[in-house]
Length: 210
Image (cartoon, rainbow, N blue to C red):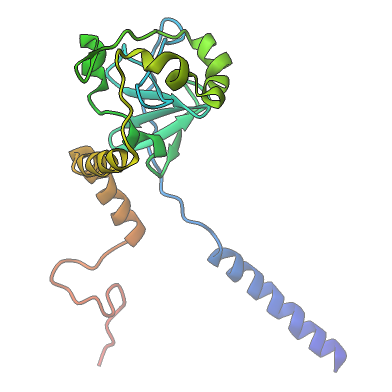
């Protein structure tokens, strides 16, 4: 009797383990990676006023350095890497810093003015950035000593910052490429849907024959 009971338990384990393992499998959505950006040399950056985000001004792509990572926005999707030109990995969230930067910072950069004030920005070499970014952040270097190189710079109040974040979040959500990506994700998370005009109940199953 004990042998029969042991055999039954062993057989149950054989069938149960594969099923439970299959149920725990996480289904990943295949996300395309952005095309490489070719740089003749490591890129120089500028710090965006009011932040500790460093943008690459000489390209049309949105490429930033923040908190030890390189961040890239491409076709409504975010990617990050420890390198500026390779190793991109899809990041399913919107980086926290993004709503703190002015979306028109490139225009201000080209004009040399930040909201009406002269902006005498410093172009920071890549290796200098890698060496100093952490110290600059810890010491609050740009706000205390440099005022972000903006004459008569006036920091925003916390209330103004929150209002701008909400406004930028709204503007970002309305971008066509962002909407397209969000729709693409929703469709794949939901899986196959019943054909238009067909009832959902029993869809995909064979009809019982009378």
